[in-house]
Length: 256
Length: 365
Image 1: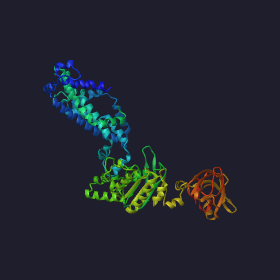
Image 2: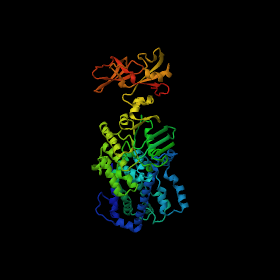
Image 3: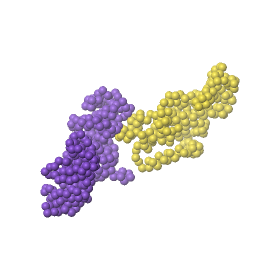
Image 4: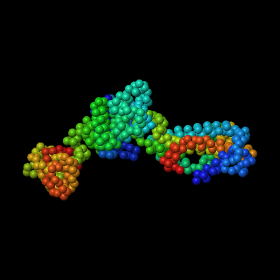
C-alpha cells in the first residue's frame, strides 16, 4: 500500500532533479543530479513571491478558522440560547453544499466589494469553516462542565475560558483542524484562479498550475515537476511535525 | 464571612421542569449547612444558583447584606469545590491555586503567601509542582479545596466533594473538612446524597425532595422529630418502619390496629389528646428499627413475625420480618441465633413511636 502511494511521489522528486533529456529514461535512482530545473523555474515565474503569498494566506486562514471555529463551537456546545440546535443543523447542512454551487454568488460578492486581486478575496471567504465548528463543538462537549464553572468562579471571561482553560485540553483537535485547514487552503486552485489575476498576489498552486498548464513551462517536464515538489514540500514538513497529534485526533474524532 | 439568605427561590428550566419550588432558607454566619436528598431532588441546582452558575427564575438571594440574585459568579465572593475536582489539567498545583488570584490581579507576593498558607493547612507543600494527572483522587480534592481557600471567600460551596473517593478516604476527608470548618470559621454549604456525611458534618441540614425543602433543622431534630414521612424515611439507616393502620375509640381510650390485624395496642396516655382527631381514620405508625428488639421491656408491646432476611453486622443483626402490613426491619442482638423463615416474637417500644397523617404525610406525633 505504502509503496503504491510513495512511488509516484518519489519519482516526482527524482525526476525534478534529473536533467530534462534523461527524464524519459528515468530509472529508480538517476545517474546524474541537477538543480537546473529549479533554477529555470525561479527564472520564469515569481515562485518565491507565490510561496510567501501562499504562506501568508494559508496561515491567516488557519489562524482565523481555529479562532472563529473554537468560539462558535464553544457557543454551540456549552451555552444555552434560543435556536442553538437550529443553528447547529444549519451549519451541518451547509456542509452538504458543494463549493461549486456558491462559486458564482461568492465571486459576484467579491467583485461588488472591490476585492478582486486582493488578499482579502483569498482570505475572508474561508475564515468560517463548518467542519472546524463541528470538530470544536464535539471536543468542547466532552470537556466537563465543572471545569468551565470553576473558571467562571475564578473570574474568567468566556474568551479566557475558551483559549486559556479549555484549549490546552483539546490540543489534538486544534492540530487536526489546523493541518486540515492549512492543507486545503494551500492546495486551493479554483478560487484563486477566479478572483486573482495579478501574478504578485497569486498563490503557489495557482501559479504552478498556470505555469504547467498555461504553457509557460515550454513543455519542460522537469521544470513542472520541480514546481510540484516545491508545492508539496511545506505540507509534508508540517505533517511530519504534527503527525502524532494528527493520528491521535483522527482516531478519536472518528473522522476518516 | 457571611450569612446566606434564600427568599422564595424558584428554578424553572426551559422545558418547564421545576427544579426548585419556593425555597426559603437562612444560613447563618459561620454555619455549616448540608443540603441532602435523593438524586434529582434539586440540591445541586440550588447550590449552583447560590454560586451564580445557574440563573434564578424568581426570588431573591442574599450573601451577607448584598442582594446577589443577578450578580455574576466571580463577584459573589464564593468559592466552590466540585465533585470531579475540576482542576485545570495543564497547570501545576501552585498554578491551579493561584489562577483565580492572578486574574483578579492580586500582586505576586500576596498570591505566593496565600497559596503557601493554604498548602500548609492542607499539607500540599510537597505537591506544588505536580499536575492533577499525577496525583491521587484525595490529593486532587485537597488541591481543589486549597483553590477555594486562597480566594478568602465569604462562603464555601461544596458539591458532593467526596463522592469520587473510596470509602476509607471519604471518611478521612470528612474529618478534614470538619476540621477545616473549625479552623477557617467560615460559612459553608455542602451538598451530598450521603446521609452519614450530612449527619456528621452539618450544624443544620436541609432535606430536599422533588425541588421542595422538606425540613431544615439540626441532625438530631431531623432524626428524632422528622416533619413528615419523607424525612423519617430518608434520615436514618435502616430507614424508619412505616406500618399503616387505623385508630378506634375504645373504652380505655384510643387503640391502634394495623391493616393486617397482627399488631394491636392501646395508645399511651400522652399521645391520646393529639390523636383524638384521627379517630376512625387511617394513620401511619412510624417506628425506628432500634425500637423493635427481641427483649421485653416495660413499655413494649409484642407481636409475631417471620424472618425474611438477615444482615449480620458483627455487633448486632438487622432482620427483616414479615407478618404485619409491611415488612418491618429491626435490630436484634447477635447472641440470638436467627434463621430464615423462623417465627420470632418481637417487642416494640411504644414510648418512642411516631404517627403520620396518611393524606398529608405530616407527623402528628
